[in-house]
Amino acid sequence: MHFCFLYLCFSYFSFLVQEICENPEFIIGGANRTDICQGDLGDCWFLAAIACLTLNEKLLFRVIPPDQSFTENYAGIFHFQFWRYGDWIDVIIDDCLPTFNNQLVFTKSSQRNEFWSALLEKAYAKLHGSYEALKGGNTTEAMEDFTGGVTEFYEIKDAPKDLFKIMKKAFERGSLIGCSIDAIVPAQFETRMASGLVKGHAYSVTGVEETTFKAEKVKLVRLRNPWGQVEWNGSWSDNSKEWNIIDKSENARLQHQIKEDGEFWMSFDDFMKNFTKLEICNLTADALESDRLQTWTVSVNEGRWVRGCSAGGCRNFPDTYWTNPQYRLKLLEEDDDPDDNEIVCSFLVALMQKNRRKDRKMGANLYTIGFAIYEVTVVQMHGNKQHLQKDFFLYNASKDRCKSYINMREVSQRFRLPPSEYVIIPSTYEPHQEGEFILRVFSEKRNVSE
Ligand SMILES: *[C@@H]1O[C@H](CO)[C@@H](O)[C@H](O)[C@H]1NC(C)=O
Ligand SMILES: *[C@@H]1O[C@H](CO)[C@@H](O)[C@H](O)[C@H]1NC(C)=O
Ligand SMILES: *[C@@H]1O[C@H](CO)[C@@H](O)[C@H](O)[C@H]1NC(C)=O
Ligand SMILES: *[C@@H]1O[C@H](CO)[C@@H](O)[C@H](O)[C@H]1NC(C)=O
Ligand SMILES: CC(=O)N[C@H]1CO[C@H](CO)[C@@H](O)[C@@H]1O
Ligand SMILES: CC(=O)N[C@H]1CO[C@H](CO)[C@@H](O)[C@@H]1O
Image (cartoon, rainbow, N blue to C red; front, side, top):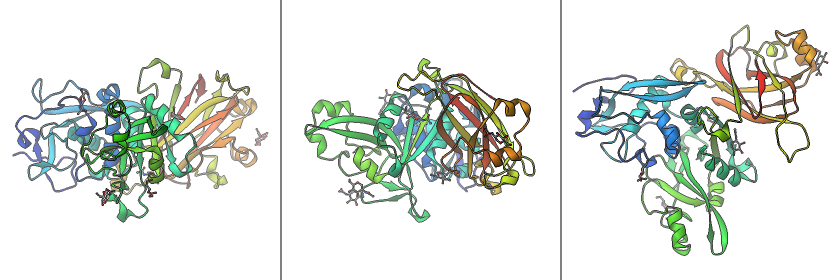
């Protein structure tokens, strides 16, 4: 027997994979979303993101280098790759996994001798400091760590009218999509409702389709519960009568299966009524080398808020606001948008706070963060190249800003502004809060940011 209490805060035993089963394999028959079954850890957000990832082999194999096995060149270690604040980093782990009664305690595959999902979870736990640190989170966070993409989330009740179109387009482009039903009180976390849906729990969207039902078009979405079981049991669910009415060929096209595997279809209307949050992670050039995404340019800027120096808080604190880090953005060219007579530049700003999950054991929580964008004249730019001063912010209103300051790891938003020179001010809501961040600016055309 072999103990290793590596990053564990739980009193589970850890066993080498070989001691759990005789013929362990890394991946059996491809890495599928069915290989992910949640264990005793509240990390459904991470698992929902992996399930989305398995839909795109190219992305998956970037995170999980596939040339690893328990037989050939086996050395007792495995490695995985995650996107971390602008870079891809390699995380190496040994194959000692937490078990209880000879069963894996956390994530496991539905096949007893397949281990890629459990090992990936361990590597992710190492990245964040411990398994404990993975408790609770938003799916977008893991999606970004797997792709370097940029995410946005929608409150479904306030979502744009063309949400289905957005989802379909995003899905076709290979974006990762997750959804959940808010639990109002913590006691409702992961509680199962009569509909078969689970509150306070992350699902992955694994299909977005339309079909014809009784001569009418219906919009459908396919979802997956990372538990690998417990499914919706309303219309369009595995056993529902709708499937007997539509064409056989449609059954096949939509891969309808009656199987307790956590995956099910539901109508988009029911989805809208029952779910509260939708998260989309769009891939950037960093995730895919595909040509159509090359038109986006990204600039990554690192920075920090330091107490008494650059931790200025939001605009409500005029005495310190101006001390926040400032990033210049020069929007040079207009988009080639033929439908548009106005000259505007479309760009996206994403502000991510670093290390808060890792430092949680030291009492760190996510800060409430956001940013604003100010236009500056050329004189201001060159006359005082160092830093815009207090007066500037007293007399000039921002041109645009993020919708709200929010306590998420990342706040992102798309903007359309005329070509000019701007300054982006990232800040925490309250002043004097210390932290590090990265600010990414994605634009469809060349821009300059410093
Ligand atoms: C998840 O998102 C909600 C907002 O929808 C936010 O309040 C919460 O802090 C986020 N949690 C994490 C761990 O990012
Ligand atoms: C993601 O892609 C969708 C669909 O293509 C688009 O509507 C949305 O604005 C994009 N969001 C971000 C944050 O890039
Ligand atoms: C759906 O599932 C839940 C829990 O499994 C059960 O209580 C409920 O009766 C089911 N509803 C229908 C319509 O089958
Ligand atoms: C979920 O959808 C079903 C079917 O449309 C509906 O009857 C039910 O009220 C919805 N649940 C919620 C919480 O809105
Ligand atoms: C059950 C299932 O969906 N198996 C699929 C797993 O993934 C491989 C390729 O990645 C497919 O060939 C299998 O059919
Ligand atoms: C663009 C703009 O309105 N700039 C004004 C910002 O405030 C300064 C005072 O600090 C004015 O001189 C600028 O005209």
